[in-house]
Length: 212
Image (tube, rainbow, N blue to C red; front, side):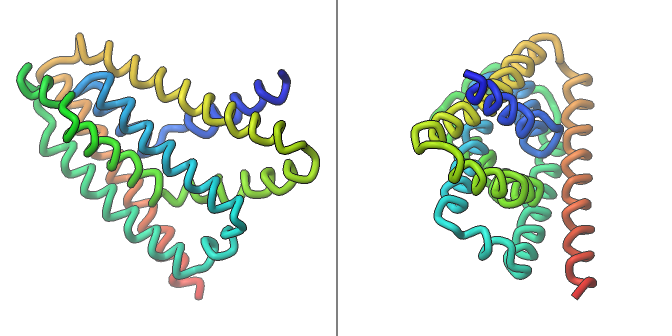
């Protein structure tokens, strides 16, 4: 029970800090509703599961190579710049027809891909999974049974999911009273925050290049 609770807390700790995924979940929830927000979160969780698989296959060393990190910083910055510009360009409130269209499978699939892309190319995510959690992963393999290990992984993702559901519900109900100019301001601020994260990634990219 203690291990399960610890894993859930770790999952919440991973998901809770304000970052590109949290911003996108909130933004989509405010503009399009619960379904679009939670699908973005599920896309991000899929990338997290992929990182976990890579760690279990012993590929941490490959991921830590400089040319791989450079590529991630570059692609991640471009992706966030694109999302930030889209947030500002599409800042106005949606019509009821547009909101209904956001529940269409094609739009939900697009939201899923966005969540997956943000998490996949987010260097902060890499720092956690291949740095902090990679070390914890190695230590757990030696001190737990396989059953205990998989229970830990399961509850880790339960914690991530619970936090994202909480965000999606908050954004969904927030969309009921955020209208017009206020929603436009929120979308602009979200876009500017995404630009900030993109600039941060570019800064880290330049630091990495200049350090060689």
